[in-house]
Amino acid sequence: MTLPEVYFYMILILMQLISFAILSNNEDLKQKKYFSRYFKITLAFGLIGILMEVLGWNYLCDFQCIFIASIPFIILILSKGIIIVFRKIFNKEPFQMYRNELSDGIWVKNKGDLSNSFYYQIFTFILFIVPLVSLSVLFTLLDNSC
Image (cartoon, rainbow, N blue to C red; front, side, top):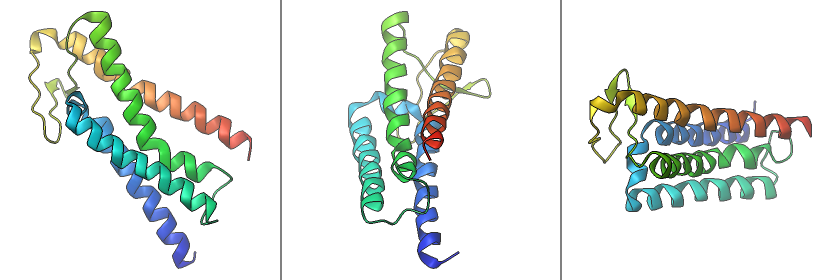
């Protein structure tokens, strides 16, 4: 493996670590300033993926670099959409749980009530499953075209 390939994969791995941070700390997405900060960062990642593809710095199949670089952006949009849907349908603020305790974000403290733990557990399950299934289906469709 050459040095440019190593840098390429390191950049993609860093982007996926950011995806994991977004997915596991969705309490921050409820405040507009943190959502807009994440939005700008993840949009920049997607643009970096496009730039890597245009410059030919892609060691994957066509468009897989763009897809993998856009995963944080897709997860951000899906997570925010799930939060909005849960607020509208159930008229309750959804909070994420981790090991039967309320999970805090990086900057925002979780202010949920454990009396609604079943609702929070459903929300947490949906929050992890929907992006994983959606991204798996999209990657499978993209991989078949390779």
